[in-house]
Image 1 (cartoon, rainbow, N blue to C red):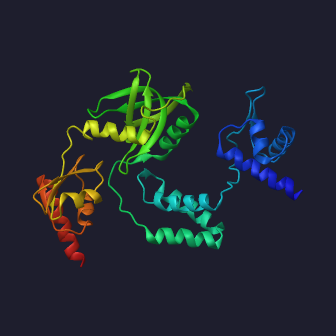
Image 2: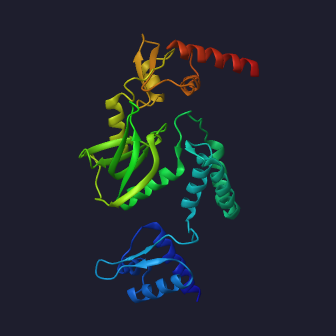
Image 3: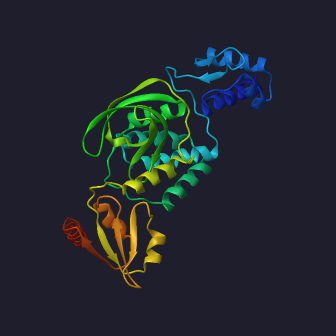
Length: 319
């Protein structure tokens, strides 16, 4: 009975890892016969887990959505990754997810073995981040689009472009990419017969499934690299109001500490450089530059200079 129970848990864990398995694949992973897999699947169904089966040579098993969430079986590394990810999400850019992340983290840390709690605490205490006041996206929209990427499902949604023009898009999604500031969707636009990147904060209203799509590969094979290339090609936003500061450090040293996808670094003599944002400036840009801990002069635009003075005044009052 113990061996059978352990095998059922292992089978349930495998069904959670991948969307669909053939009976032979499951049998090979668990070192049993396909007949045993069929019996174990029937036992999982009797326990209330909605395991679907497709007949035939190309058929297989998959765990479909049910009325209750089945137990998630995580190994040590997965449990630590989820806990750290939840702590990060509590201050993230996805609207409405902070409180939910805190509740989920409390449940997870309650059942973590002490050795894993120590690892999570060590990671959390040794790392820190500051948030950007960038656009926030709806968690349900992100989840729906990510699921469509996984399942190769076509989508339709309303989209507002940079010129505020609203359009209806019919796409085959491939991947969701987070730039560190914004969320992007890489997809093949069926109406335009070409690849496109979409800012998820500009997706408006409900995202609708539109049938089965093709499983495509993004040009170059790397969705993150593709988005970075497209952003660089557009210079982020054509009408962006860029911020510039002068740092009292050579361009070579500054370039090692400033990601090129966020800002450009140009020499200004041997011991100084000019840093310019690739997109519109924000107050976080000031904090980011200040955290480099080198002498800094804010150049333009005038609004950025005013924001710097206001920040200095607030910090002086707090000291």
